[in-house]
Image (cartoon, rainbow, N blue to C red; front, top):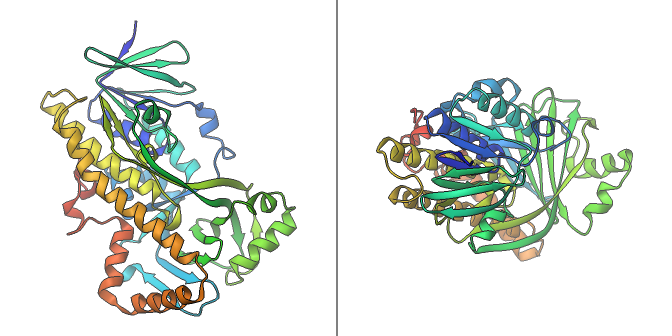
Length: 407
């Protein structure tokens, strides 16, 4: 016998699990299928990345009662500094120019996963099937059936693919994607430094790609070092002293002596944009719909915006007694999210290409433009609001979770 749910979410990463929590809290019976075991997800060695939780994402997490548990381990981003190569010109964003809220917070993915898993366990309408994998989706007369490698089956009215930018569920549905590799690899690690960072995040654009220094708690910073893929393996194989030297030449000495206090991880960088987010009783969210360059740390924030929009559409349809797997509420989700995601993907791709180009005419024009934006208050404030994820017209123009209202 198959287990019956209203929604099955394939992929239990931060975006998929947050959506499951939102639907479960609203009384929609939901199953989240995650291939990794909870013990692995709670292991610090599993994933060394951090997430830049923009203002919009903090609001979504707060609206679901999740933020309070992770806030003590989150470091506020109060200022943001953009520098290019050796140029003396730079762009400086101060959060006080647009209000009292910080731009966002840096949270370790380990903390994010732990809070989400702990919350999911307390929701009666939500089932998390970990260490499980969906082999295929079968369409039935009244919905879909998710077949698991364990032999279990889950019937549902709607399947949601949250299984990453190489989503097997998306590929099986025949949804085409725009995709390319950046020939860049992100090297990720955590450093401790002698001087406090004062909540300042730095994006230093170098010819090989952006080098980000993201403030963490306890006088630490997360490093996201985009390097040419051809060079990345050699850097990963360096002994600790040699690696620290290479890191230091790019980091600089403004925070004093550095110490690498974590393992190193390497992630190849690419862009993936699904041409559509809907199929027969199937919806795409998160990286399954859009995987972008990590420049400016917007990837997971687009996913949380997906959650806010899709949860509202499904909860409203559920209250009206509608079939969740088909109807205008799904078209509404696609309309709300597709343009925003494409716009952010285009912006991050363009910035990476612009600032990784070291041709002299481009360099001169770029430096002049950077200095001009730094002096133009209205444009600068608009860019800051966009980085926070604020909808055009203010927070009150977004979905309910973003407006601070319950679902």
